[in-house]
Length: 69
Image (cartoon, rainbow, N blue to C red; front, top):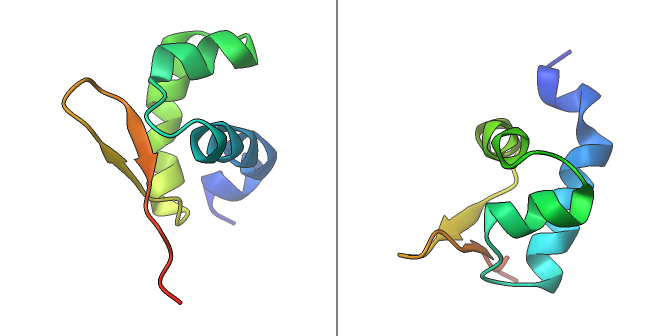
């Protein structure tokens, strides 16, 4: 079992925040979840491995990739 499977609920919550607030920065995600910014930054590579894909803008904001139909 991959590490990311144990964190699915946390990943889903981060994903929801990014999809509802395109361009949100990791610091704001952390504030809303009540965790440290470093926690969010450590989760992002694992989320990518688990299939959650985001683009980062020049300010560090996160944007969800749109799924092709």
